[in-house]
Length: 197
Image 1: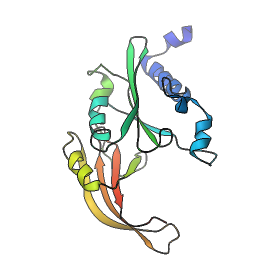
Image 2: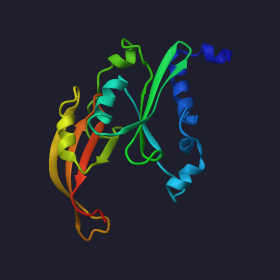
Image 3: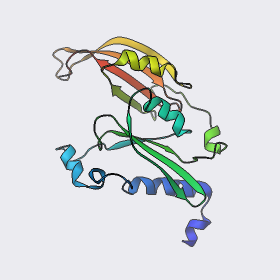
Image 4: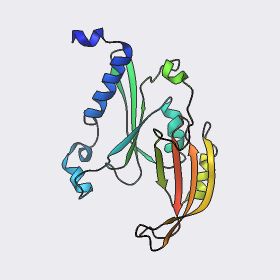
């Protein structure tokens, strides 16, 4: 315990982040608490359960992911770590367990925190910049809402694009849109127009 108090603030923050990712989510429904639900959700040995984005302002991010894209909040808690408050939100599309998006504000209720003053990096489609890809059947209406979110930076409005099919025998027809969210994460919101098989 003594060693913990001797660490710098940055080391403590890294430790808390690591612990958050190692611990199971708390306060969730029994479906989330049951480890067997992973195998119920997929026959594979491994699943990508959640991607968590570190954000500057959870409410601002929710304006995009919940209110404009249409994800559903399934977990929203403020976690107290000493004098620090961390707000952690999970959102889903179809599945309660797999493919969940997390939003975490490690400086919740601390608007002047150094991390929140860092400039947003918009480096495009380059290494270390993940791309979140969403599919929707209602790109037109969702796009209108996304355009109204303050801080969203449009890269490409919905544009017809073709990709080779999985077996290479045909093409997948897609309307593709690309933009940065309010924290500089790359997002594609797409509407598939033909079968992807």
